[in-house]
Amino acid sequence: MITKVLVTGADGQLGNEIKIMANHYPSLNLLFVGRNELDISDKSAVNNYFISKEPMVVINCAAYTAVDKAESEPELAKLINETATGYLADACHLLNIPFIHISTDFVFDGTKNKPYIETDLTNPISIYGITKHNGEKAALAKHEKTIIIRTSWVYSSFGKNFVKTILRLAGEKPELKIVNDQKGSPTYACDLADALLKITLLCDALKPWGIFHFSNEGEISWYDFAKEILILKGIETPIIPITTAQFPTPAKRPAYSIMSNEKLIKTFGIRPLPWKARLQECLKLIP
Image (cartoon, rainbow, N blue to C red):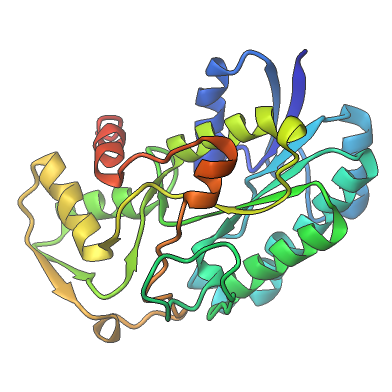
């Protein structure tokens, strides 16, 4: 049987990776929409679109992800990350179909010193984190058949991300100063896309509603990440480790946001790969 899947955020990193990954999932009929095709912040438009297209699963990759800019645009961040997520969950409830929603490590405050699990206390410390956390709560409250996938430090050969920024800056500056006291796990959007499509195939049988974590395996700092990017690309621009205090930003970031993948592994049999090997694969696609 062919499953019709609606994917929002079609033009973002994750949406583009799902488009590529779709070829490996012939039993899924993927319908991609960006902001030009569907305004997810318009409740009537969302409901009418769902009734018209009759998707069988929805994967919500749309999000306001400009972490620092959100501090000065809280209403816009709320509209996309919270209100619109609620509209999508409502529409999925209307059709009684699974809703898979992407969230973030920024729902945590970063004060823990071992990997976060799904039941750990959330305490976002930025507007972005708050709106994403509220989006999670809205989705879970409005629709029982909701799966939240929290991820972290997402990068890809598409769009704007840390990997591409480091490569650009290394070509422009004599040296780079990168924060070394924030720890996390990078996630190759290609791997997340594959996991989402696997989950889509399994969700009706397993009924795994609730929250899961997904990131590539390993614990590093932004400095470690930047250093490995340049090593793998053979770029010799010097990198200097600095503290968060030496690089103030409008939004606070969790100092530690490693998340455990164990629940995801046990539930779906999906085992994320080590970050370094996956970074190497991504860099092959970036000139």
